[in-house]
Image (cartoon, rainbow, N blue to C red; front, side):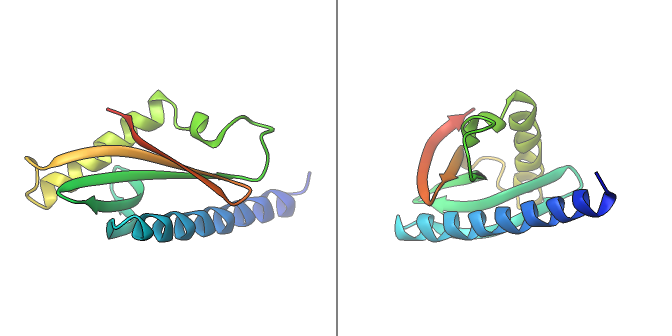
Length: 123
């Protein structure tokens, strides 16, 4: 496989992922969540969406897939990925002086334009 093919696939996947994050944000807004940040990045990593659900800060990982070839999208949020998201979230909360806030970690999976919102997907 040529390098061009690999680069093209990376770009295509990134664009598809961004589309999923936009869909997820619109979905959350329709459920009365307030979007605080999208694609938040710090030196430890990235969180797709940070939202407010009433008084709870919700860190949301978005996974979009076009097929089940590699399993359900949520299965990609393994223990290693969860730990990374938690560290990014802790750093975010520390920077914003919100260490005492109620927090939760959700996963939104998108398959063929169907959205599944796993609330409190991991701790």
